[in-house]
Length: 218
Ligand SMILES: Cc1cc2nc3c(=O)[nH]c(=O)nc-3n(C[C@H](O)[C@H](O)[C@H](O)COP(=O)(O)OP(=O)(O)OC[C@H]3O[C@@H](n4cnc5c(N)ncnc54)[C@H](O)[C@@H]3O)c2cc1C
Image 1 (cartoon, rainbow, N blue to C red):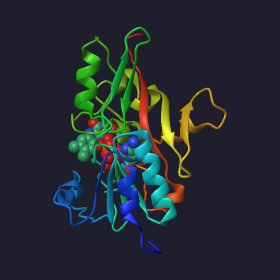
Image 2 (cartoon, rainbow, N blue to C red):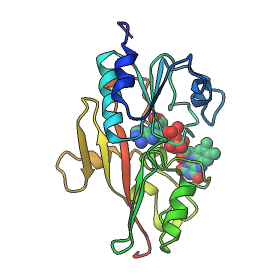
Image 3 (cartoon, protein in one colour):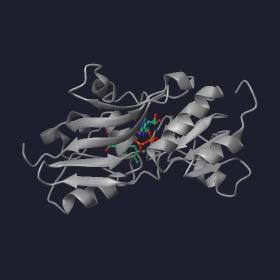
Image 4 (cartoon, helix red, strand yellow):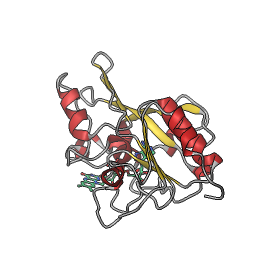
């Protein structure tokens, strides 16, 4: 952080919560699955909409804050937290839309696999996902994803059709097979855990939701 950031301005531009170290729920929100990574972000943006993520990314970029993006918080390497930067917590993005006709499901950036499975199973649908119910769909899918049924149906990222992405410059784009920029491939980074956001905010993309193909038709 090269200058004093005006966190009040950020708070005013979020519909979700903004947490600073003095806030009572801050310490709880710092925790990730691997407790070895006990980091203290300067600010936590608990986003509840796409506009919140855009506001958080823009604020981090303008204030030279390193960004960590969190979906389910299962990164073993601790990549979904950071020291002194901004944590963009997507846990509030819980929307799940199922299209039984098309056999597709769209999940918000904070959806966990247990929630996703419960929603798709109501329609008799399935996509290979995490073996543990509390792993995030966002980090799992964009990291590859090998689940119980992958030997039959492939990696989760193989079933990724499109993703809404907030780019580091604050633009919202849809990554899909139909766009020439090839962003969908960037969203499929198997086994690298590359949202290694110990990079300047300028290099960071946040995947907001993912549209997964259901495998019943295979
Ligand atoms: C208990 C446990 C069980 C696991 N089981 C399996 C398994 O069965 N199969 C398997 O393949 N792997 C498994 N893993 C590994 C796990 O899939 C990866 O660590 C995955 O990246 C976790 O995703 P997450 O969203 O829960 O984690 P997070 O820690 O939130 O995110 C992981 C990484 O992805 C980034 N990220 C998360 N969401 C987004 C987003 N929306 N946009 C941009 N970047 C994002 C984060 O910044 C971080 O770098 C397991 C891990 C644990 C701890």
